[in-house]
Amino acid sequence: MMILNTLLLATSPLLAAQPAVPGGGTLAIKVGRAETVSDGTVLHAVILIEDGRIAVVGEDLPIERGIPVVDLGPDSVVIPGLVNAYSRQGMDSRGSNKSNPGLRASGELYPAFRDYKKLLEAGVCTLGLYPAGNGIPGRAVAVRTQGSTPAEMILADDVYLKILLRSSASSKSMITKGFEEADEYAKKEAKAREKWEKAKEKADKKNKKKKKDEQEDPGPGPFVAPQKDPKAAAFQELRDRELSALISIRSAGDFLHLFDAIGEEQFDFALRVPLSRETNLFLVKRELKELGCAIIMEPRLSLHPATQRQRNLPHEMVKAGMQLVLIPSSDSLDSHQKWLNDTGVLVGAGLPSHDALRAMTLAPAKVLGLAERLGSISAGKDANMLFFTGDPFEPSNKVKTVMLEGKIVFGEL
Image 1 (tube, rainbow, N blue to C red):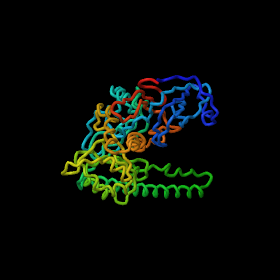
Image 2: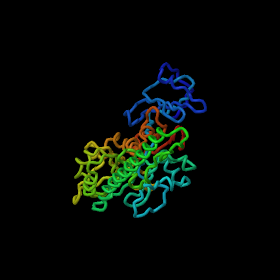
Image 3: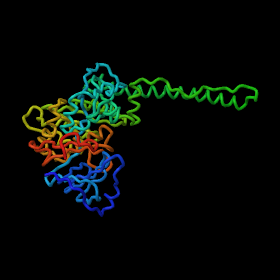
């Protein structure tokens, strides 16, 4: 039973040092078990929320006098809000067959999409929405699943560049030529800057020698770089680590093409690998580990090719030392609502529950570049949390309460 306490006397300087923000709100929540993801499991946890963010979390922490306390009981469990880094929910464009690396998915964001509310009720607090299309369709946007305008929904734009790679020479050259075009632009810009610097130097020398009654040479003005091609710009941003990539492949063969195409280039990327019944990605586990990239998969068991032997590839990726990111089994509303249950099947087949939970929260937040703000129950992060009675991966347990940035948006405390 949930009990609202008026106060607990505090002697701890940790909690006493967290005053209520004027105009904001401070609340302490006591739960039987907090799965923080970043700092493991905290039993008999106290979570202090202040002005929409987590101020502190710890075991049996005393609470400052006057702070309202909600005690959810010994069977209560809290986890971070779910993060799906790879979705098209609420987007309806079909894209094109031409690469368009400058296109932003945020341009087609439709806040009135009715399923955002249902996604939030299922515990999905954050989405990474990518543009449709082939080749290089454009740039993804990270959104909270609530808001009446695009500005209210958007957490960050340009969170990754979407790239679809296949086992073909043309697909491979898409990446190699992208970096070549970035090189060509860099040379073009260097020549333009050199020309500008010479003109400026000439004007400066002339002005130093001019007589008082002579007009000053204005020189070339401020430097203006040559117009940058969107593809060259995108690949230069990748190289400068101002932008990351999310690259979709289907097989070990696709990956080898990618491995060859990357060559000596250094940039941040995640791999999206759709899990079919006979996915053969286990053939390149060593190479995948060398790259150190995140692997994005559905929570699905597969079969060893040409056999009926079951494989838990997500678990194999974790055991091999890779960063696993899980997404719903499809991009439908129903799959989002069953996401925890489907992941529970992997847990039952051997994937440790803490790795499964990380793959649905902190790992996808890292893909979106938002790990400093989302994905774990940690001090300083947004208070996005889901409350349960019992294990979240048990099929009979449903989300009872959803908190988004400190506000109850579904259920009650």
